[in-house]
Length: 422
Image 1 (tube, rainbow, N blue to C red):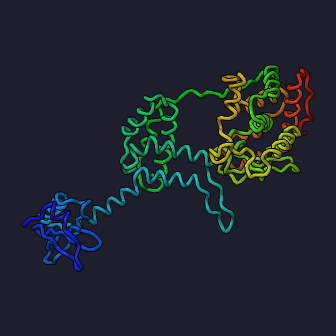
Image 2 (image 1 turned 30 degrees about the horizontal axis):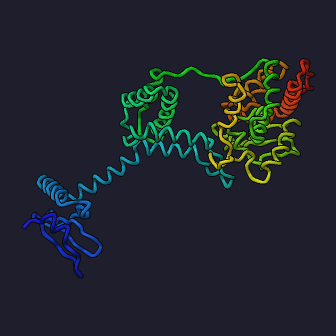
């Protein structure tokens, strides 16, 4: 007699395993550890036993279907267990070459340090952590749910277009453009590792709208910047740590993440330097060199005040709420500038543009200014040379900038020039 659901549900395990037959080789094996579906069949004159699942996750109806599917394979001359093993292997291989699997491997190669050669220290990651985290967030939110499970070699330009157009439709044009670039890099990695032969994302380089570049708001007029500096110096509706962060940002030209993630171990007041390690620089730079930020007397004075507040810990700008990795939120300074009435006129990142513009008027070389701002040099050898080559001039630039900020805060109109590098 065939089994019923009630029998399967109510049967209890005995001291020895029980076999409840359903028919055509299918039976429920009842053990102390659980209930298991088994199917006995003969192939090439030999008895074979196939595992069809565990009850109740696999119910009676499903077990019978698996048995019938196996019998159909037998009718074609195939061994059901061998077919199952081959399908399992194919699925495993497919998972290893899925877009998601390749993307994760590519991401790890950029986000993790690389072993040093011949006993040398590990090389830093190509990306800073904040960059790696942002890219992974975009992939997990918009890419993996759509094409993550697809074999990377089979993803088509049409699939890419549909995915990116959906992102554009919600108004995230920049995200769509950035994800096209990211996916293109994943496909190039797949081609290099012989898991694909085509880059469908590259074919869309002209079809996905590229948003216009929006520069961060920055005051570049000397008199107007002086008004801003005086407003900042007299501003009292912010905590001391935030005001010190703003002043140090404008005296060093550091990016938000580089400033907020600052560690006391990076600052050498005797050498008058702040050394930002490659892992904390924009995109990691793929460099072994730290970005050396010369510290003016004005910057050192801020650091001394700051040390009185946070010098007892590792982080220079710890979060008051324990968020964002334990450092000050990237929105803290922005909100302060808004409350000061400078929304759309001045931003933290804009301090860099303000300084570059005002210092250019004072005759400093473009090359040294660009190096001080740590703008990317595509050639790693040239970048390392340039950092060293302009360091002394950059020390003078930052001293001049500190003096200029102090003079503008005091309302001066004529500001003496610092001695230039010879």
